[in-house]
Image 1 (cartoon, rainbow, N blue to C red):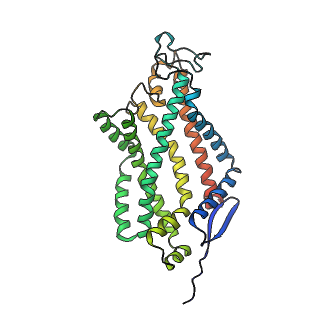
Image 2: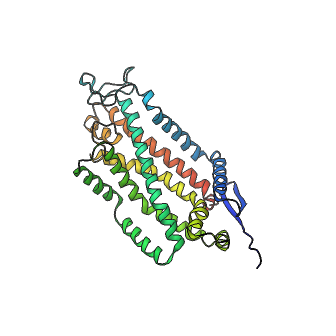
Image 3: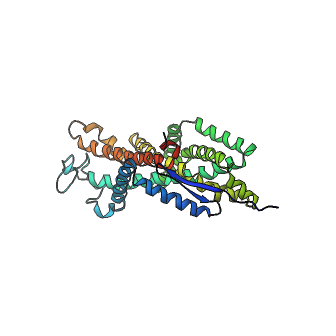
Amino acid sequence: MSELQAPNLVVAGGSGGSRVLPASIGPMTRLSTALGNAWYELRKSRTASIGLVMLVLLFSACAATPWIATQNPIKQNYRERLQPPSEQHLLGTDRLGRDIYSRLLWGGRRLVTIALVAVAFGLALGVPYGVLSGYYGGRVDTIAMRFVDGLLAFPGLLLYLLIVTLAREWKAEGVFNDLILIFALGFAFMPEVARLARGSVLAEKQKEYVEASRAIGDGSLSIAMRQILPNIISPLIVNATVRLGYVILIIAALSFLGLGTPPPTPDWGSDLSSARDYMETAPLIAAFPGLAICYTVLAFNLFGDGLRDILDPRLAER
């Protein structure tokens, strides 16, 4: 029997071209090479670079919050309510005399953390589900995708409201309330990730490197998770990055409606809601949390759009 020669495999591409590596190279090596190529292209993309700089500033502020926040974010002082920006209160105070600058920092730190964990949870559920469904195919794929179709037919916002309302009925507070929110957001994200992963696997599993892996005796699970998954990671990363901006909007919207973080915990959505009655007399208390939400969503969207241009060679050729 003649020895089967493993074919070459294109592992990364962008507007600057692609690199071809032998299939015998390990999947982690191929993944690291793809990420290295993506970083090179990232520095040439103006959209992605602007988004990256904005995200670096955002994450730096979140990480440094305990040191740069000047006041206790929940401390009330009715004598200093609705104060304009000053040396003591850099962005002024809200209707309860709380420092807006400190509330923005602590609220952003919590908001970004919940969004990151929720999207990671959705990826952890959806990626293996979609990869295995697409790889095994047949009846397994049919049953798995009918379940996903059922979830997608249920409006996402309605699902969030249902789960969060049930949590309120259970009197969930503190960390437990955050965990319920993370579960709702991640579970609603799972069907979208599963369909994306499945579609990518269906295109990949017919390629020669998969046939070569089967020929040398690799198991189905090993091929799906160690060979195919590293080669479909690009669209998943792009989708997750853009999804982060949407998740942040949903969290802020739930808090704005009174279904998110209960007071007095700092939260951009609830702070924006409480400022509605003071739009004429003290518009800054609504402007700052609104601008913070816009900045954060724009940063993730710009970075996600730039990544999509870099990691999808077909889009770059249009």
